[in-house]
Image: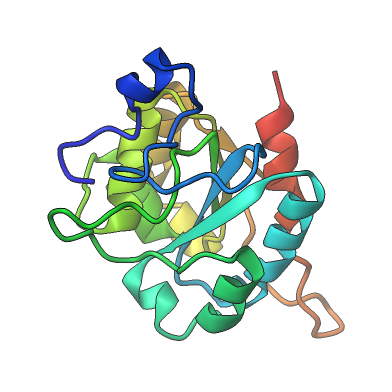
Length: 202
C-alpha cells in the first residue's frame, strides 16, 4: 500500500469496478459495495461482529483491518475472518503480494481510540490501519468514526484539535463513547449501527 493508490485507472478505463484487477487488488466476489472496518484496541472491539452483521444486512461486503494490538487479543480474529470470508489485515503487504481486499467504497473506524485519532490527524502512517485511513481521506472515500475515548483523555487539547482537523477533512463522527458503567453496574451499548447511518448522511 505504501506510496500506492487504491484506485486503478486502467480498470476504470475498461469500464470495470474499482479493485477488479486480481494482480494488484483484491477481487470483488459480488457487485456489493465494499466496506473497510478499521478496528482499534478498545474493550468494545470484542463485539465488532455486530457491526459486520449490520453492514452485511445492508448489502455491504466487509473487510477488516485491525491495529496490531487490536488483532492480538481484543476480538476473535478467526471468527471475524470466517464472518467476512476474508483475512484480517494488520500488516503491510510484501512487494508483489496481491491485495486481499478490493478498493473501499467507504470506511468505518470502530472503535476508534485516542491514539489512533491523534496519529491519523497528524498524518502518521506507521501501521496499515493508519496508512489506510490517511490514504482514504486523501482519496475522498466516505469515512465514519465511532470514538471510544475516556473523558479524561477526550479533555486533552490535542484530541480536540484532532477532531477539528479530521472533521475539516470530511470525516464523520458519531457520539463519543466513554464506557463508564451505569448506576446498576452495566455498561451502555456501543452504537455500532450509528456508523452505517453516518455513511448515508448527505
